[in-house]
Length: 268
Ligand SMILES: [Zn+2]
Image (spheres, rainbow, N blue to C red):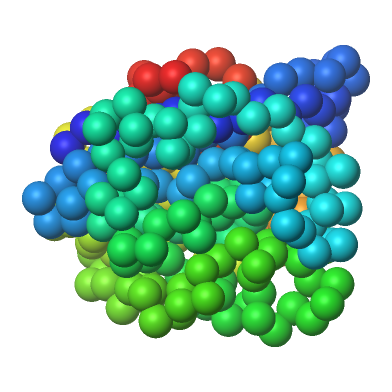
């Protein structure tokens, strides 16, 4: 199994907003998603990145989502759109059998409605928390139920139901998705139910949004700025970062969704 990461869009933000060691100049961040194929899960996506349902000129959005897209402006990359990447491989949206949904922030679920045949692997806690968050919840937490397919709950295979396992290199308890190949690593704190994926053969962890940039992860400083403000649980987020630092010290590789530098898994 080979995970490929693609970049769906760029977002520009002042560096100091997400890393205390950076200047205030605006930096360009990526918005990655993943794609792989495995006999057990079929054609599988890891999130969807940003797409036209958030940023398309004719997108039908609620006022809240429209406001969100004004605040967190992104520039879509046509060649990195999930529909385009699939088409380049001769695949249609209906060919996608599984979508692993790391959490419910808009930049991870923007295009999920395009996939009518897929099962979703995601957190039940996350889905229930968004449902409870009231009318201000989406803007406060960046999770918009309108981006989820109407039958999301009935197509959801909850990570909470997967068998628990002990992961190596200080990662602690995880859940087996594909035995000995791919495991779910709960990384609470960034959002309710947020999790990463451990690739056993590569000894690598796609830690999604546990932090925004690797430099900040390595700096050993407490979470500050935007990553702290949007965290669902700051203490849990910092505990997750400590685990990631320990994992790296033990020889593991951490990959993040928004890191500007290329990773070993990036195709685009
Ligand atoms: Zn996020």
